[in-house]
Length: 52
Image 1 (spheres, rainbow, N blue to C red):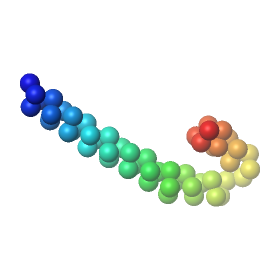
Image 2 (image 1 turned 120 degrees about the vertical axis):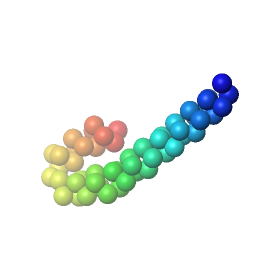
Image 3 (image 1 turned 60 degrees about the vertical axis):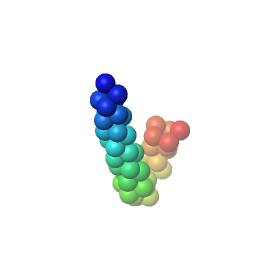
Image 4 (image 1 turned 60 degrees about the horizontal axis):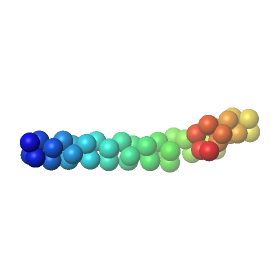
C-alpha cells in the first residue's frame, strides 16, 4: 500500500510540475504578446479577469 501511494504522489508531482511550467509559458509568451497588441478596452478586460 505504501508503494502505491508513493507512486501516486510521484506521478501527481510530475503532472502538476508540467502543468505549472505550461502555465508559465502561456502567461509569458502568449498572454504578454496579446496584451502588448490589444487596445485599451481589451487590456482592461484582460487585467480585470485574468490578473486581478
